[in-house]
Amino acid sequence: MPQVDGKYIPFGLADITVGEGTDQIMFDGKTYLQADGGEISIEPELEDITIPDFGNTPYDQIVVGYNGELTIVAGNRDLKILALAMGYTEAITDTGGQTVGLMDAKIGTSMRSKAKKVVIHPRGMGSDKSNDITIYKMAGVSEFNESYANEQGQNEITLQMYPRDGADANLPGNFFYIGETDPNAGT
Image (cartoon, rainbow, N blue to C red; front, side):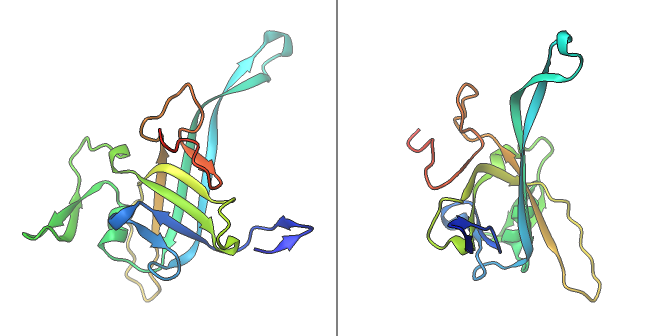
């Protein structure tokens, strides 16, 4: 990653890892490719505290939640990519248990139950994980939209953020962390 006066300047793609173990999908330029750069958005949900002495302007704001969304544009596609993008689907399996297709999930399916851990690592950082962003749980909520024109297809994946398993609203560290150290390791 480029440096100016000893400070890192963010530039370029990131390796994005969704899930863990055998279900892991890695957008790393080898396993799965990106047709465009990814984008993460994390936004606090704030509630205004107003004091009549100061009019209607916020005297303070209190964090009441977080909204987060990650967009990845996959350069290639298979059933794993479609299942990731369309978290609201279920696998169609053959008699050997292999996934051979997808179908709509039943009405009332929890998206949080389908969520996976996501790690975003800027490629320019090499083995330095100080700028890695880890989201504890994200699930695919993308619309399915397919164009059959004479052009490169776009497989846009939108993942929505949810609180981690074992979250405690009285403590920090329920949605994400930045850096190498998981503040909830071992809990």
